[in-house]
Amino acid sequence: MSSQPAEITRFDNVGLRYGTDKEVLTDISFTLFPGTFYFLTGASGAGKTSLLKLLYLAQRPSRGLIRMFGTDSITLPREQLPLLRRRLGVVFQDFRLVPHLSVYDNIALPLRVSGYGEREIASAVGDMLDWVGLADRRDGRPATLSGGEQQRVAIARAVIARPDILVADEPTGNVDPEMALKLLRLFEALNRQGTTVVVATHDVHLIRHVAEPLIMRLDKGRLSDPTGALRYPPRPSASGNSGRAGS
Amino acid sequence: MAGKQTAAARWGAEAALLPPVRAGGPMPWVIAIMIALTVIAAASGLSLRNAAHAASADLSGGLTVQIVHAAPAERDRQGLAAQRVLKQTPGVASVRLVPQGELDTLLEPWLGTRPGDGVEGLPIPALIDVALSGPATPARVESLRVALAAVAPAARVDAQAAWLAPVFGAIGALQWLAGGLIALLAVATAAAVLLAARNTLGTQRETIEIVHMLGGTDAQIARGVQRGVAVQAASGGVVGLALGIIGVFLLGRSFSALGSGLVASGGLHLTDWLMIALIPLAGVALAVLTARLTVLAALRRFL
Ligand SMILES: Nc1ncnc2c1ncn2[C@@H]1O[C@H](COP(=O)(O)OP(=O)(O)O)[C@@H](O)[C@H]1O
Ligand SMILES: [Mg+2]
Image (cartoon, rainbow over all chains, first blue to last red; front, side, top):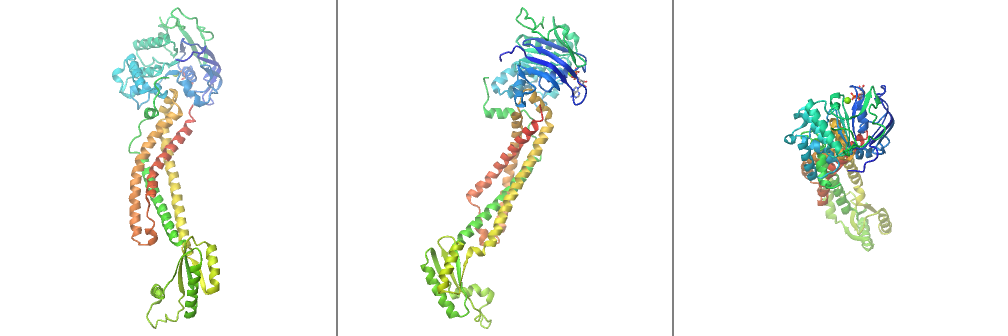
């Protein structure tokens, strides 16, 4: 889609506090490389969602430096944020589907804001609906869908614009283990097409389904690097996929 | 990127970013009332202007010369002399010495005509109606005064427009009042739209955040709100224009019942009606602009 920089994201000594509370994230430093698949783990309340919010530009840090696609996203004027955000796909923990829009229109949103034509949108959304198995629900409102169906709509919306990086916050939290595994395979398929993927989860069973996972671990707002993946680009695998996710 | 949309298609797609405006809200009615009042105020202002124009066109070159002299013989002699001089003065279009019979008729309601009323003894001035080819400026009035002083020392020269100066002053004040009302109505309309737009932003906060997170711009969100406001303002504007025109006709009828020449000359021309028809369009433009500025200002507080 666009030329890949040597790094997707770099955090340098980032700290975040809400209001005047103590920091919920402290001294966060890491680099995400193109085409890799990361898990972000940690107990509930460890700061996973907060870290992802910084990553998908929904929150500015209290201190530190964040570069997205080679651009300093902290000092970037807010008029220029949309262009960066269009290169991100986000699956929010609470889905955040637009209630008055149908499944079809929710999935079409990222293409609409980017100014694509309706013909192109129709074919892309149609493919996406088939992919997540919701073709028969295309005209339904989010409120009429089950939790798992809403989640799949959220995922379809996150990936339809072929983002450079997909960020998913507990994307398997509301689905049964079988569907969770299916979603994981879906993310892996996307990763194989070159998208960097970051999946936040506290579900260790899910990670076990991945051969050599790259793990970012959060503990009370501090990041550890148990798989040593955050400083240097992972070695490319034989399949040409630089991430080590997948079987 | 391939497949970019036309502006019109984008307008439709972006409107879908925010929920459709619910019919039955107060906004169209507020705008209808504002537009109706603006139409009435504008029509009043325009017809006052037309009335003033017509009156001043009739009167601007008009002069009255009165010869006030107690002795009728001397009065008539000076009257004829003044008439002669006036006829030879350049820039004088017409001169008419008002005949005695006409003067009597004019004065009859005030003075009566029956013998024994003591009318004969009253010194009635001779009256000369003068029309200049241009407006009766103070300088021209003064030069005529000087010219007449030699042959008719009892002559008094008055510009007819001067008598109506207080009326023109009142009309001017009413026109300012109409203009002020229109300005106030515009401010009130903008305030109503501002509140409605803020309300939309408040109830749609979650949707706006989502659209932002997906890479939507402030301008796209603003266009969504603008479209809703435009639809409401347009429906309010049509109703308001209709109500306003009905009001103007009712007012016009009750004024023409007065039978005053001034009011009768204050009818609206075609161009006036065109201007009045533009009021709803101006209202929609004002509403859309207000909505846009409100939304853009409010969105600056979002990340
Ligand atoms: N908007 C917020 N305002 C104040 N505190 C918050 C906010 N969001 C999260 N927190 C706090 O930050 C900490 C980390 O939360 P979060 O990032 O949601 O963790 P996780 O996603 O790992 O469960 C928690 O203590 C939480 O209470
Ligand atoms: Mg969380």
